[in-house]
Image 1 (cartoon, rainbow, N blue to C red):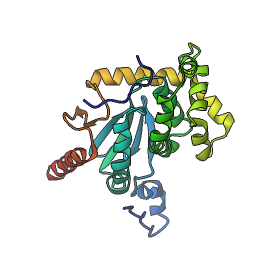
Image 2: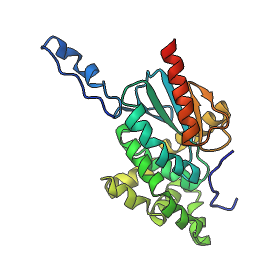
Image 3: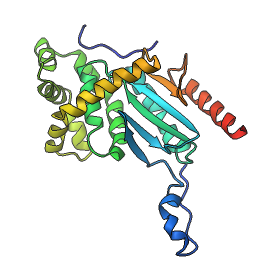
Amino acid sequence: MLAGVAVFGTAIIAAPAFADAEKSKNASDLKRADWSTFAARKDGGNILGNPDAAVKIKEYVSYTCPHCATFARQGDPVLKLYYLPTGDVSVEVRHIIRDPIDWTAAVLTNCGEPEKFAQNHSLFMGAQPKWLEEARKATTVQKQRWSNPNRTAARQAIASDLGFEELMESRGYSRVEIARCLADNETATTLVIQSMEEAKRMGVSGTPSFAIDGTLLEGTHSWQPLQMQIDKALTAKRDQ
C-alpha cells in the first residue's frame, strides 16, 4: 500500500435563465445546475460537489505523501472540471494525519469557510515538493521545536520553517487569521480524532486510498484506475 514519507525518523454548465418571476423562487436550486463550486464540511471531511450525488467518492490523503500530491495534480482537475459540475459525482476529501507536518497542513487547509478548502488543498499539494524537501533537511533543533508538547507552538514553528504562512498569505489570509487557525486546538484535535476513527472504520492503511459509495477500493491508489471505477459506477447508476 502506498504511504507518505516519514520525516521524523520515528465543463461547466450555465445556470438556466428564468422565464418569469414565478420561477425565480427556485433560483437557488436552478443556479446549482453547476455543482463545481459547492462545498461543505462535515465530520472532518470536505465535500466538493453535490452532497446527494449518485456516485460519492472519498479521497483519503496525507499532505506528506508524495503519491497524494501526484494524484492531486492528475486527478483533482479532471474531477473538478468534468465530473463535479453535473451533480452526478461528489468528492469528499478525508485527512489521514501521519505526523506533525501533516497535522499543521490539515489545520491550515481547513482555515476559514468550507468554500476556501479546495484551493487551499490544491495549493499545499502543488507546493509539496518544495516544502517537503525543506522538511527532509530539517535540523535536530527544528525537529525538537516541531515536537513541542505545546501543540500550538509546534504548529507555529512548522508553519514558519516550511513556508506555510507565505502559502496562506498568497491565498489572501492575513497573519492574524493564520495565527488564529494554528492556535485552534479544538479544531486540530478534532481533525486527528476523526482521521483515526475514519481510517479504522474504513480499513485505510495507506495513502492515497479511495472509496466509492462507502466501499474502499482495493488496488486503487492513483487517478487512472480511480477514473475507471468512477465511470463504471456512473454507468451502473444510469442503467438502474
